[in-house]
Amino acid sequence: LIRSINEVRIRLVSISRYLYFGAICLRAGLPAHQRVILVIGYHLGFRLGEILALRWEQIDWTANLIRLEKKQTKGKQARVAPLCGELRSWLEMAASDKDRGLTIVSYNGQPVTEVKTAWDKARDRAKLPGLLRHDLRRTAIRNMVRAGIPEKRAMMISGHKNRNVFDRYDISDERDIQGDGEKLAAYLAGKTKVTTVIDTVEEAPISVERPN
Image (cartoon, rainbow, N blue to C red; front, side, top):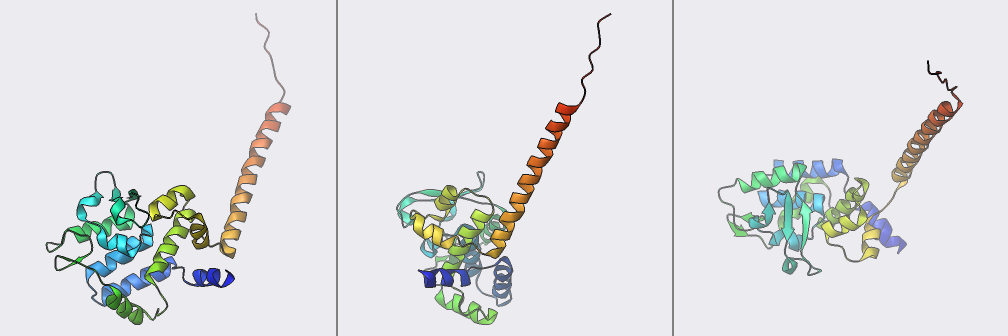
């Protein structure tokens, strides 16, 4: 168990590494589908099979949602995920491709079923040989929790039904503990201010004017 946790900790993808790897993908001239997989995986933690099966008709641009059908998910349960920020921008760009196919991840209009070769080449160029596609899923879970998304909804977005697996991916480190300390200090400081105001009000003399 200790070994597996250490491995997960090593394979979390920081925002700087994500941006760096994405830049390498762009400069290397990799097909757009490779970059879309990177962005969706990093933001939502979808499994590779779920990403490859996504069709454009499942993007609800008005509601800012991505709707997965139960037949597409490992847990056989339909679910929705948010469409926002950089993720939406990337999908809008991909949607504008005149040669796009029915699926979001397509190449020359045809569905993509294999991405290992392109991924391995990008890893080599970025000098990140240990980076796995599944690392994006681990990282997405951690980012959602750190962003303040309730754990139950984060599990719904990523498609986790097993709480043990979810908790294993939500790794804490010293920076998290330091952040917790800052939050606690801010909370207690706020309580102190409220108490001070109440004490001041209670101690203030009350003047009552007599009616004429």
